Every structure is written in structure tokens, then in C-alpha cells.
Image 1 (cartoon, rainbow, N blue to C red):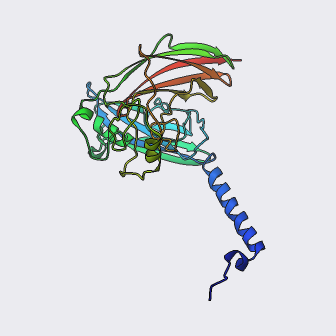
Image 2 (image 1 turned 90 degrees about the vertical axis):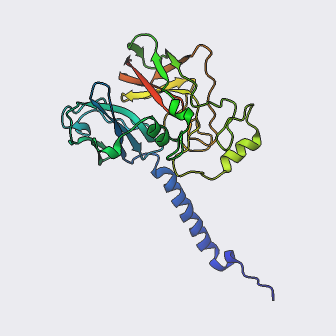
Image 3 (image 1 turned 60 degrees about the vertical axis):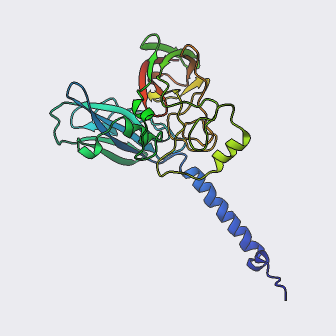
Length: 321
């Protein structure tokens, strides 16, 4: 005899309504929980030697929020020890994972001491401990691998030949602006063209296809499962502008790619599934406007990234009403 079992009738309409409402509540909570209100995890990325015998400790962070960009001024909640609390760390934290954000130089006789970065955000305190242990030694191949340009433990003659791009902010290092009134930022970016950029499309295996990406290609790239255990990133030169220090917000126009690992489909980020490298200006000069929403002193951060390696420059903007 054919079964007439109906799960909807079996559980009853009130129970079904309760179940659906509960699931919607859970989904709503899951969507909002990580937008704001969570902590920021400071991260020690590693160290590298400098030509003068000193060492550079490299730091980044994981902002557990997808939307909130906490402002934490230098002080008890954002400090280094031993030594000066201010070691050039950011006070504005972009969403999600940000690797190799800044460096702290320590002297040649640092030895086996620890440099500790303490960060307290939304009531949660976390620490990152930097040492000169051999396991944390970093070179360009490690950076390219950790940021997703290469697969774990892989390299090539091209990747080993890569040098970082050079970014230079043109004009004064200290500027003035008014709330709501845009200022112009001109930035020069030079690169060696390595790793190979694919401004018109990237094959599923990582090589350049040439020509505009087809609908089928974009769909396949969006739907395919991860092919490696490390984060994946599309190689290609790009410039980003963001607040490094400052309490307010800035609008950059036209919008530039995100320097943080936004892996969502169609996110304007090299880690997004459908991201393609932007066109490079013929003269290598990028021009954007920056508009601030509140007065204060800001450090603006320009990062040029070729997919594998990066270079930073900064300016200070004093914003008045």
C-alpha cells in the first residue's frame, strides 16, 4: 500500500511554525553575531633580519567581526611591553584576517626575550608574543605562501624572483581637511610585473587565460571547492587606502580593493571568489578622493600589493569641522 505519511501534517502546524521561527531566529543570530561586538586577536607573523643587524618583528591581527572596525587608541588596551607602549601599531582595525600589517624593529642584542602586544577589544583581552625562535623566521616565500599567493610549501622561479612593489604617496606628508569635504590623494605604484597579473581573467588552475572572463568561467570559479589547505588569493597588482590610526571613518572614491581577507563571492578583495585585478593606470599614478566623517588626526595607510608581496606608505591628515 502506498504510504500517505506527510511530515508536515505529522508534526502539526503549530510545531512547524515554532520550528521555522526558531530556525529563523538562529539564522538571524548567526548573521548578526559576527558583524560587531566581538574581539580582535593580535597575531605574531614572524621575524626577519635587517642589514644593520637588527630584527623586524612582524604583526597582524584577526578581527572577529565582519563589519565593525574597532578604534583602540594606544594605551592600556593597545600596548607593547617591554619598552614604549607605542610601537607603531594600528588603532583602527579592519574586518577579519589582516596579515603582516606592521613591523617593530628590535636591536641586534635582543636575544631570547619576548615582545608582547596586548589588545583589548569589546571587553576581551588578547596577547601576541614575538620571539626570535627559528621557527618564526620569515622570507618572501613565506609571506607569499601565508597570504595565499602560493600553495603551502610551493614556489617557482617566477615567485622566487619577485620583488615588492614600491608605493609612494605624492605630495605633503601632513595635510589638512574638513569634515565632508574630499581631498585628493595621488599615489605612484611601481612593480616588476611578478607574479604574472591576469587583468582579463584567471584560469581555474591559476594561469592566465587572456581575454575577458566568460560566464562559464566565472561560474566554475565561484562553485569549485577549495583546492588547497591555505587561503587562496588572486595574483595581480592593486592599491588600497585605509585608515591606520584615527577614530572616524573615511570614504575613498572610487572604491579600491580591500587589503583584508574577504572571501565572500564578488567581494572587492583578492581573496574573493570572483575578484579580478583592476586596470593599472598607464603612468602608474592612482588618483582618489578621501572624505572624512568627523574631526581628528588620522594616519592614512596606502598599501601596494602584487599578490605575493607588498609595500606601505603613510600620510597624516588633520581634519577639522
